[in-house]
Image (cartoon, rainbow, N blue to C red; front, side):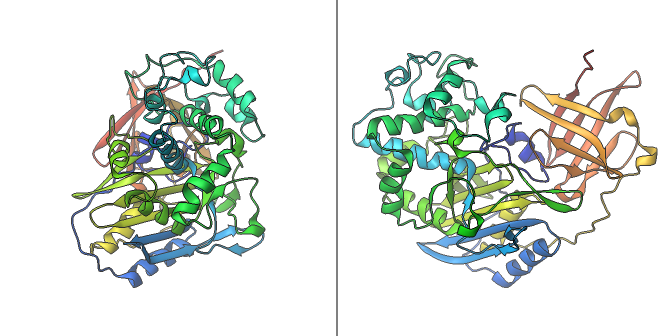
Amino acid sequence: MSIKISFTLKHLLYLNNENVFYTTPICFLGQNGNAQFDSLKLNEYFTQLNKHSKAMTSVCLYHNGEVIYDNSIGYLSIEQQLKANVYTQYRIGSISKMFTAVMILQMIEEKKLNLETKLNSFFPTIKNSEKITIENLLNHRSGIENFTNLDAYRLYSTTTHSEEEMITIFESLGSDFTPGTQFNYSNTNYVLLAYIIEKISKQTYAEQLLKRICTKAKLADTKVGMAIDVQNNEAASYDYQLGKWTPSSETDLSVAIGAGNIISTSRDLCAFISSLFNGILISKETLSKMTKLKDSYGYGILEFPFYDKRFYGHTGGIDGFQSILGYNEKDKLAICILGNGFNYPLNDIAMNILNAYYEKPITIPTFNENANKSNIESLNQSILGKYKNDKLGMEISIFEEGNILKAQASGQSSFPLTKVSEEEYKFDDAGIKITFIKEENIIKGFKLLQGGMSIVFEKNKLVL
């Protein structure tokens, strides 16, 4: 699902315009370091984020099976003034896919199915089901259209849906390519895998999660989410708009089963991924298959670089929640960030935590709340409107709000733009630069630049 955050280009590259639990890797850049770190400086960093309403989050570093740093800032419920703590449960979005993949791989080890088992053994009415394998579902090479990309998704995402109702929706989906020939991230794949787990086990996904993972990895605060109960230490999520936190939408997690329906704590997720890489959940041989990447994706798992180090894990986003989980096998280090509100790049938080651990400089920003205000009076009004990149399936709106020029991707939080020139605008907090493309004095689109990468968005044509 989409992450609601002030975007870096990395976020824009990977998040798509879905409303829920889609995500792919955020890159960490750095060098080697040792295991000593300045936790006081890290505390100061989180104090600043909290003071300036930049994030509401719980974080954990876990080394060799033990928590070596954790911290929580913000509220699990602003309305009730309930502060978050290390036991607060957050919706983890697409990190749920790691759990689903592990359970499927366990069943393969038990010879209850195999990677070549065809989808038509379970759901023959899905298009190309006779060609789609379990492996195709695991590594997003099935070709099945991503149901969360559909406009209709937003009409039913907040109400409960049964398997029968979801399969009816899936039966209407198209196929993006011949199964096995390409990669295309699709939440549909993992909802189907969850239903397959239930069919084989004759138990609910929640029961299998408890039996196959939570009990084995000793996860006390991980489960399938229901309607959010803040009195039970479950976080509600928020967007930062017009200088304040506002409640986000609440997806009914029945539509996200297997793909984004789990709630957990940062401590539990560190314990989960450590158990995974230490042979408690699946064999080393199966793990090597899980982490074998094709088109940058394994079986429910991604790779994140941090200088010359490699972390395996996943990221997640659903409603206003964002998350990241990673593990470095050589250093036996797990990192987890869970949050229910962000007005600051998640990637920067992850970078600073790892910089602290590996004894690299920690950047503590000085926030100037007025720095991003644009000169609306001299604004070229023709730049306002919607822009799209068909390859990414993403749309970005440029609009005025409260005398501030803003940009916002579909389903995401907005971020302010500062005017540099008639055609150039920037968002310094994330290092974003937007340059509008003009032909014959008409705005045709813009180029979004950050970190040496660029994406071109075309302005939508007005249809009368």
